[in-house]
Image 1 (spheres, one colour):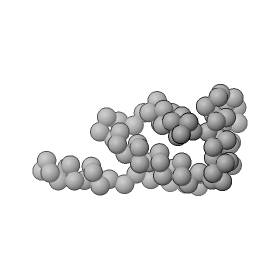
Image 2 (tube, helix red, strand yellow):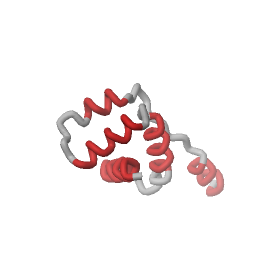
Image 3 (cartoon, helix red, strand yellow):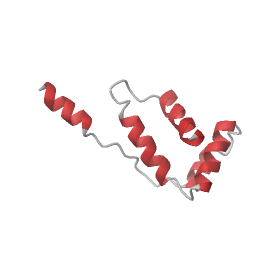
Image 4 (cartoon, one colour):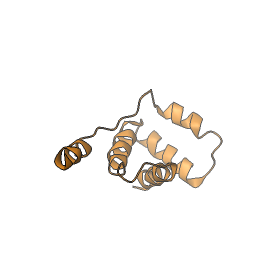
Length: 84
């Protein structure tokens, strides 16, 4: 059982449902004038989309499943993505 659980966790696929575009993200960040929000939006505009962000975020958050994915963890990863 232990090996099966480990295998399932290692092969778990994390995805985001719904249409997440730069315009949609801009709507969410409309009232957020923080440095992190501006930097993230700038990076998304530079990359011409949110696809790379979503792939990177899902990949990194998958590693956090055992400890739990929290708002703080997502915020931390968005900031790291914008800074990279």
